[in-house]
Amino acid sequence: MWFLCVFYHRLLDFRKPEVEALAELFGEEIAENESLQWRLPEHHHNDTPFHFVQLSSEEIARNIAKRSILVKGMYELWGEGTCYEELKDSILSYPDSRKLPFLTSDSTFRISVETFGRGLTFEEQKDRIQSLTYIPFEGRVNLKNPDHNFFLMEMIESEENNGLQPILQRRIFFGREVGFADRKLLPTFQLKSRTYLGPTAMDAEMAFLMANQAKATSGKLVYDPFVGTGSILVSAAQFGAMTMGADIDIRVVRDGRGPDCNVWSNFKQYGLPMPVALLRMDNNLPPWRSGLKEIFDAIICDPPYGVRAGGRKSGGRKILRGTVDPYTVPDDKRTDHIPSTGAYSLVECVHDLLHLAARMLVMKGRLVFFFPVLRDETGGEVKFPEHPCFKLVAVSEQILSSRYSRVLLTMVKVEPYSEEIKEAARLMHLEFRENHLKWLEDGNIHSSVFKPIDSSQIHTDPKAFKDPKPKYRGKYV
Amino acid sequence: MRLITHNMLSCNIKGVTNGFPLRIEAGNVIEKEVDFNPDFIRHMFAKLEWKALVEGARSMGYAELPEDSPDAAVLESDESFLKKLHHALLELHLEEGALVCPETGRKFPVNKGIPNMLLHEDEV
Image (cartoon, rainbow over all chains, first blue to last red):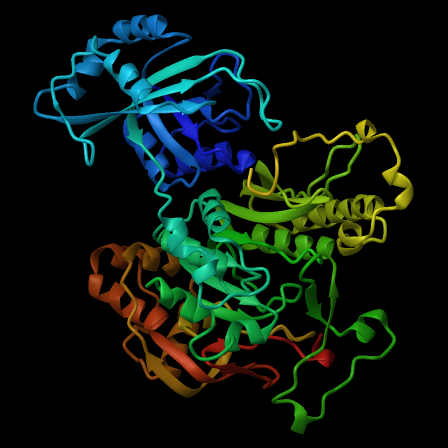
């Protein structure tokens, strides 16, 4: 069945992957190497909020919409057209067997009018509703809590507006609402009111999107190897998953800022079950027992890319460089000794993450993580880290500044881990590291993001800088 | 730290081959109730090292688990067993104590429920 899926106009790259992940979660049968079928309305551009998607049942559509963050509504389309005459013909030709059950005299209904491109006065809205008298509504109107919610959506022609795509031709849709997103989660979980925050705590909306991409749900175990303040795990726990986290910085994980201001209190704040475990460990030298594997259903994280928070690993700067030999800490100082840690580059960090995921994820488990990308790539396609155990299923860009974005990568484990695969992965990693270092000037992202613009560039022709993404794309769109 | 975590950890000091299971030195053990989710417990059962779990539970003061790992069939039929397993895996907490490597004797401290598995400079 085709449904009209209307999205909120934000985080555009994240919209469809979210629906695809949730469709899989709610039982939609999708063949190997295929994804959901999508269609655009006539004359619409891919950034439009209106998309048609094919799903096998209304129940799946409703479940997807309800759990999603970006689906404004899923509708069973009763008719569409470029003018009200066409709309009438379209609705009249829609089979009665699909319409009459929702128009019965013992039900309540409401018709809402929504327009895109221009506001409508109350009179104009009323006129449009009145024009639908050819639909045999027998029930009573209930504006507060109707059994059936009908939407009349009109896209009105408009010129290019702030860089937004011009709407070339008017289009009107009429449909019955099947489900919609519950965005009330967002003000409840917003970081503004969170007890324990850190500089890189993931904001609530994005954390929920990540949890959706990972298909977090009751009975599953979700792991975050860079847990920090637990912001990502909180969202996974809200969706019912059991959570587990680790971090190399013991102050963040164990101490927090006091007995009522730590990772545990973040979960307590929302009445969520506590994480199953919080550990202090180094992802570069993890303490997993040798037979352990395929234990996590999903790994969701935001690794440190070295821009606002740098990664650390065991060893100590001087030891890793070989300036100083590994030293032995005298026994009487051992108990409170805090081992020194050294720099941990993004590439090595991601390699360890992929290795961890390859071994510890169940088959078909998902790895969801952010990867930074510099934006002034002229030509050349951006290369993402790869691993022979994983298939990349979604790439969603969030633009952070004119210089750089972060991309949410969703990978699914399709091959079991083995020693041969470990070797193949190591070679892939070496190749990736070579290429990665080539396009980063000083070999680190921090300087590329923060270096001042070379003054000679300011005088060049502005048209020469071709921004691949349209002007209206920004941090939240 | 719960027994479910203990079951996953081993000592990873360079050169150590027999780092699992870590012996539990229980300083302060408390019991915290956790909602029972039978699916989760069944899912985890397959990944556990049973002997380590039984020994660990004993160190924390819980001796109700059978010595030998039961058949998978028991998971479906015997809910009281699942509840015991749930109690051992998720409801016993080691707040203060240490995890000791069976080969080297190195102690990994557990403070405020969080084990510190970071290695010192000469163990890397």
